Length: 177
Image 1 (spheres, one colour):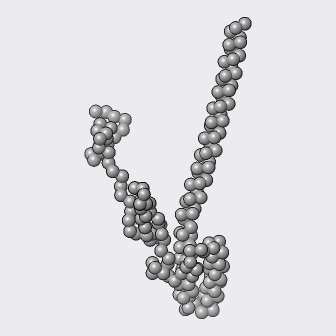
Image 2: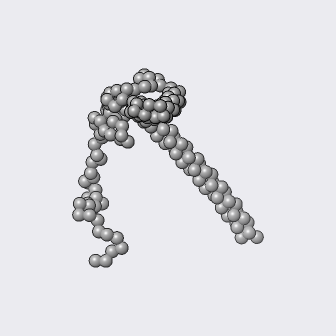
Image 3: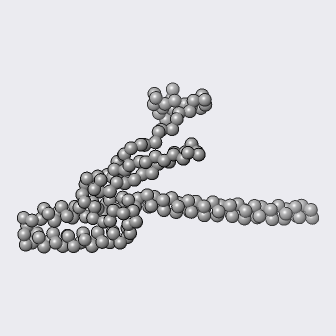
């Protein structure tokens, strides 16, 4: 048999023949998982009056992960902009200190490298905790663009329908003369 495409793999099953069997969706993740190097904890909440389960991904703080001490505040009301600027300034200061140490006392560079690594890990963790807000803002932006495109498409259809109606009226008046 000659085909333009390859045959499907042997485990492929066409569900269009038997619509009574539809595979179940995969189960949701429970417990912890790793994403982009961060360990996330999934807490599942179920609403008692609905059969809906939703999960919330929580990024544990650095000390819970046992990576490095957390430099920025541990409370939930963190001013991200302020803390990122503070960590950036601290990083610049430590890089300058590393340059000074490399010139004057080269044998003591390891402690400075450890401090810089700790600051980078704190910056990375702080940015990882902003990922859900970034994803939400991106989705909102995409949905607003789609809304504007659909609104423009509807206006275009209305405009074309009006032009079509005017042409039809013009043809009717020309046929009547």
